[in-house]
Length: 183
Image (cartoon, rainbow, N blue to C red; front, side):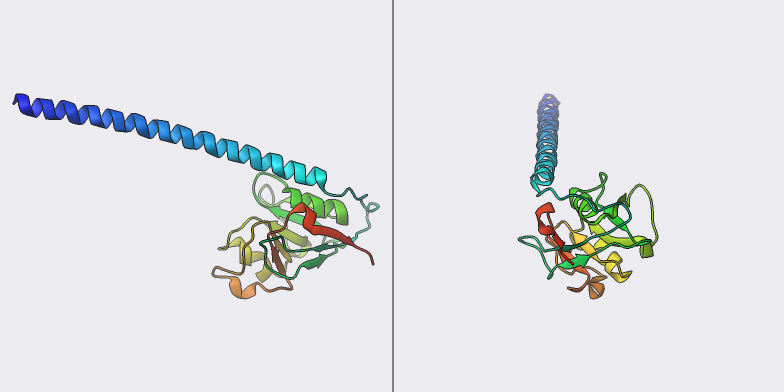
């Protein structure tokens, strides 16, 4: 029986050591994720601040912008100009209004709108800004006739990809990929 007890004690010690190692690993991963999120937030803020300042249009008037695909993006680019009743720059990225959505709103005179906190009808949306890698949101807005800007460098994918085309979708977009179009 003493031999069995010795094996049991060694097994218990090994299990404790493994549990401690798992806890240390989880803590390390958690710290790394928090650091990465902090760096990403800082980079987004710096990009918005570095974007060329442009004076917003007068209230009630709208400007057209051209939204180009980013370096690893897809599409030819979109021209977007809000209009009365269809002036929402719909941010569906989680965490509030994404800097890309805010930049579009600032340049066009449209209204930045957090699509996670509240809902709007599709016919009120001038453009949807998403952060989808290629499953659901990537196709929902194109399917509903809403021009869609993806901050990720995704290409048409997922069950709704048949609705995505170069006239209604652009991806990999950053704040510096948005320019005012003189009319």
